[in-house]
Length: 300
Image 1 (cartoon, rainbow, N blue to C red):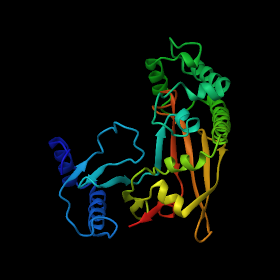
Image 2 (tube, rainbow, N blue to C red):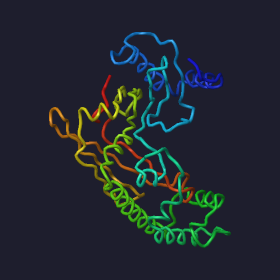
Image 3 (cartoon, helix red, strand yellow):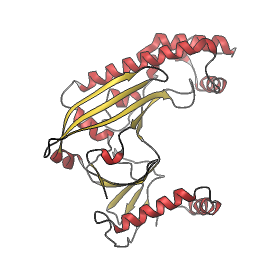
Image 4 (cartoon, rainbow, N blue to C red):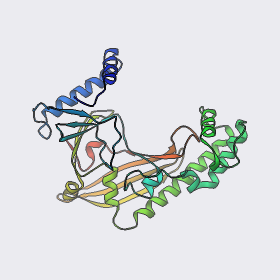
């Protein structure tokens, strides 16, 4: 196995001997044995080279989140107890539809889509906490000031700011869903965006991991494979009111051979990445449908 530093091996050794991650080590070992035996994978052939890519940032515009490469051919993504599919800037997801890499992160999404509500919340917070040296406008906050606000708000919103945050969440969710729908009305780009959401690329790869209820052992199809078997009927999104800004998404799919209707659902949380006011918001896209039920995800 290559591309693993001695320091990382030492860390793994300590983690294994410590015993706290015993279940995770056992699950990973069982997944490796299943991958070795699977007909769609190694078919009992011991690999010559296993390369660890997880700690490297992809230099190109890669769709698949690859962690391991086996014998220069088999690509594997390791996904343990996570339903997060995409972590991107809101503009990259809702306006560029995940095209062309992550690109420039852009400005503050809250300021852009719900500026008045965002400013009102900021004023309510700044007037309650008693912090000095803060600017009059939320959009003028510098990194150190954002950090100070996030630290002061670690335990929650002050009493006078809770209604303001609820209003901000609703307005951001409504405006975000509108922008996403507007971007999807131009041409037939919903299908390509769904492939990016599901992390389908030009080559098939495998997902080894665990869900809260069962092992996760899948082969992920390519868009070419997907289109041979399925047809996208509709892609829709709706704001979810209450709490932090959320947008639900749903894809309606038909099996081309059986004509059976399928559905893939999820949601996006548009939230600060380093605590309240800590940094510009990011978009975390979750898959709510179990992986095994997603068209194009094939158990091995």
